[in-house]
View (cartoon, rainbow, N blue to C red):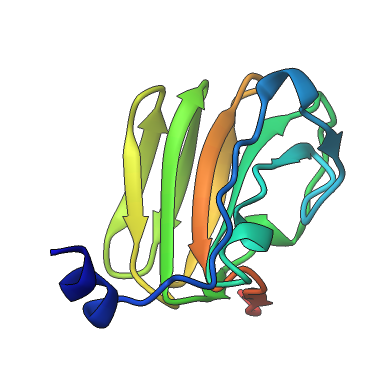
Length: 138
């Protein structure tokens, strides 16, 4: 059975990853109002995926994500770990996501943030790891 799985999806080039919460390093990232904890998945999957925890850091400022934008990616999964946020998605309307909620964003879907709580924290998994964000004029 394992040989059959390998022929269907060969990820033998991936490395095993054990990312310890006790060793977490929070760094700046795409948005200044958040801190990011890289979970080691980009390196382990050789760039196929990235996984990180994103949490609000107390800063309040407008940024590019509040404009309409999309992510150039094949897969984007978001699970809310704490707090809540409201987004507007092209063709899907306004969605408020709260602790425990999950969003599977369609590739390239245009969206924008309307509101984000001060305690907002999410687990985000995206493919590929080096995805780009494109903003649009309103």
